[in-house]
Image (cartoon, rainbow, N blue to C red; front, side):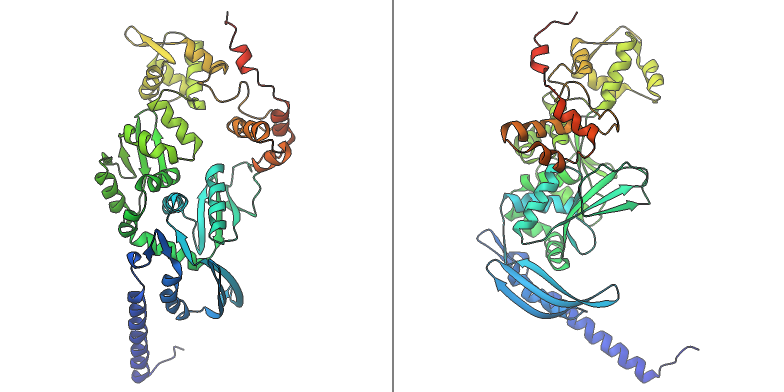
Length: 429
């Protein structure tokens, strides 16, 4: 049986609801604007929190203690978690310096933010994840790491706190470095919501570098820069930024597209941390760098059949078209074309790339994958070499941090002798 309420009870409920809504609206209105909490290149988080606290207390959280310790606010409160009342202790920074680290992190977070009540970033690049961990530590946050793994993806053997299998994705993986702190996340949401106000206080190029490391891509074939964005609220704001900087060409339904490579090279590239994106940009701008496996595979096919046409190559590669890829390889000097229909021939540069005896190849000379498990490891060699030889770090600890757990992977790194410079002195016959 449905329980019936009297008309008077319903009126009282509606009256209480309206009073509550008005109070919440007033509390939100009382939160200071971003420009009111900025002074001397510093964000006054404490000032924001004093106003935001009233919204928090209007809900389930009950503060038992708030302490100020140097540059952090210690919050102790009760909240409901998994149906039970629990005691939590969280930290907030009293102030956040508007410097290069904050600006880059804010751009990175806008593009790759962790979900739920977590403040952090979801990515897979080692340098970006290490930066995120260090910066959150600066903000007095205790970080954790989660690995999100596709159902059919091999475990990359990366040291994390928790592993989640994502059922909606067969392959691929991503890593979240975050702190569980819904209050600090609300502060960053507050900044993002009024992003037009905070951007004038930031170095826009550093912000764009962080955003590009999160959501950017470089099209090798089309020689352009793409920033992925489908957020209907954020998209027009980002388009305005690109237009103001004269970087905007078009929006293709998923990406903001730019062809302004000169600007990117001069002002943004130096702040980019993702090595693969740096390499891809260098390929189209400076015609230097290592080729991705798909291009090396194409070079091998051309080498095996000199004079192969584009139509024949497309058939071999089981693709509809290869015009863009072939043009890219020709522009960089890896192949040359002759006659009509256009026939393709590999150049000396292309041969060197295949044989891994040139600086255009990946940074070591023979294998890109481990012998037994086949895990791609070549991209880790330069970092391993620099840390063990230049910085004199313990090889065991470096391999652990790089996620090299299996014996086959570790044997490759410990047993490899780099003869690239010596062998490059001799002619090939």
